[in-house]
Image (cartoon, rainbow, N blue to C red):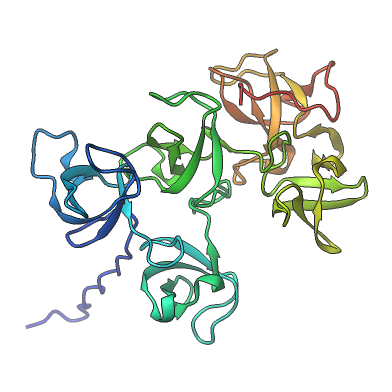
Length: 351
């Protein structure tokens, strides 16, 4: 006899696909060359790694590559990645709705790509409503790769610069963000992104302390989301490259326009403290980890962890190789160096 008041067990929570949970039949693209396989070659997953002697076999799978190039064991994410479904989107990608879809999503809602849609589009499951619908590729934008509260806004495809050395990667090396962390067992996996470094390998770097966005234009220091002053008057935000590839697209209260880098300046990052701007040379008043009081650094942006206490009064400082990047409070933990030259942006760790 059933006990009085007994409840039915909760329905199992739906498991959404991820970029790296590769299984038999999944189409993949090689991110690492091996023997006859070249980067970009396509293949199909034919089974799990069956060699117990392999390092971390659960992270690897066997891939049969097209055109008879062979079957090899590849690491999920770092060496083999899902083939795109439409555009550059793959199964498990996070996206943002550009416009509302009736009874499905509102503009700005976040969703996950769960399949290929009709007419060359995508099938997306929307988080707020739980609804699923087909959308055109043009109707969605990439969602930030890291969803942790207060984390920096890093997008798939962003070009970044390494702030720390790791194996073959050196400070200043450039890479491309290809997805979220591929190893959930790593420390703070929720803050890591997988970066494919030019001519080297792919590694899971922390987005808050180990990488920075690369400048959009060579010879300039502006990156996406920088707050700027345009032509000495209007305050705005850099949203990307201009149409001609030589200017920057800036959004102001008056709209969006393409502006030459020479007509832009970095805006103050802390209210009532105009000297703390991107590029300012600073001196630490207090030590933290490898940083000692008196160490010099360069302001590289606003506080990138918005959940920190008094985040609006902090700036992100690069203290150089071997020291690290930290969010220091302007004025109380940090002073502007006596030799700071407004408008002159010093080099960062050789980048």
